[in-house]
Image (cartoon, one colour):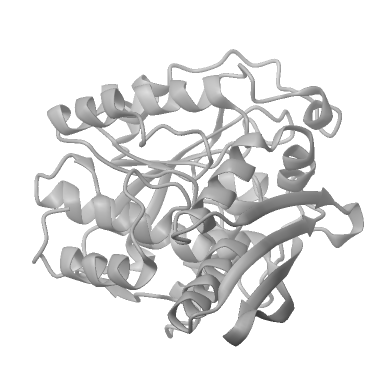
Length: 353
């Protein structure tokens, strides 16, 4: 085990719940099931320690983090036989800004507490890394947290599709300050984007012509309610993650639907219209079902530890390999196989970023 990695969690929703539960699962149960790296550069997944948390939901603000992850409208899968004790981390009131559109606000009561000074909290708690998990479309709020991370000298992991790490001025300032950043918009551990890309790469390698393809994603968590109402940035990151691999014009689309009683269970349907030898037609119609937030957690714990390694090595700015492998819209789009090779070189200390 390495040293403790002190993390601030922004947005105490289902993704946060999956991370908190998952870290405790590996502490109590052990093993490496579902992990890309149990040991990442000397850091175990259980070295990750939440030291601060921010939200705007009255049912969460002021509560211990362990209690807040069960507050409605959270509906994340609850791990059986894993006991999570209070952490002594109180959920603090964050900036509201554009983080509570009407379709989300009707599902919760907004806390009347005064928003805290985020940068001051990060400094006071000794946070080293900020993980952003606020709802898609919360652009102004995302930038407040991103700026606070830089001002506090914290690494910043952008798990949502606001293009923060892709911003050249932001990345340049992060490098000047010696602050590592990873983004933008997490690829799920085994989700629609990574599978869509894998199928596209296989088809291209086999000489299959892609004429039209789309993915439809549906689930019953608040993320999907939000995506239906303001999912433009997520649609962009998903679509471009696939389009970037195809070396000719193809009709590519992504869409979302909210099905309340699915809870945190997500289904993705993939559809392809293709042609093989002599332009003969092929149709591919496939389906994936996952617990959506655990799919986020399995990637987030590696991004956090990559930032810890970069901090240890005095590296600031964009972590190119980690962003390309873990994110839908990284600053540099790199094929997944090459991105994985680059990531392993970074972890081993053979590549700077």
